[in-house]
Length: 269
Image 1 (tube, rainbow, N blue to C red):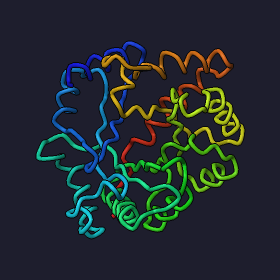
Image 2 (image 1 turned 90 degrees about the vertical axis):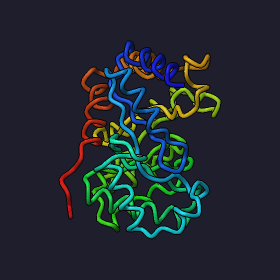
Image 3 (image 1 turned 90 degrees about the horizontal axis):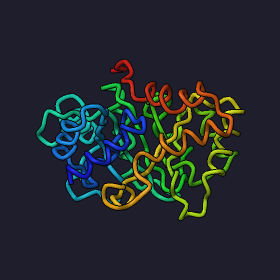
């Protein structure tokens, strides 16, 4: 519902939110016209739409039969010309890997994403299933020549294994902790914050981002749910400051790192 989405964004804006990356890709229910209307009615917030493909189970027959370069060309068109027959362009590439495996369709999409990135300079974000396959994803992207500083692995706080996370960060890739407000998974916010602090002490603060995997309307106050898109700026940021994070560090994690990631890099082809 466009009206409820705008209402939710208004609360986000009032809490200090500036940019929302809408990570729904081509084959998982993306609504380009709805997003465009929402952006028109809430111009104070930057809405960054995604091109790309979700996990193997979401591929239809047409997409499944497309070659790597054909998938790449589709993403390139959506970045340069517009999505779904509109003039609204994608600002980020979204692909995915499964739970402890990269399906052949997912590998094809990862390789296509890297090629589209090299052609357009667009950044790549990758859904990990419970934080698995992070090293393998990085290897596939790097094998295609992608700049890992322009890749972001999502949901990495589902698997807070320090040895693995440090190995991933040492490759140069970015990671996102985006399961804040998911207390139902029995991981309190305190654990996420402490793990982030450990990674910052290791010198990785320029590769860390915080977000919300709020992909269902049950998370939105405008639908009678919670905690709402305002949760990070309204609840988590003040908590971090109270815990001793200085404003420079908060700005780094919430503003500077996402801004650098979302910038298009110079074309490599």
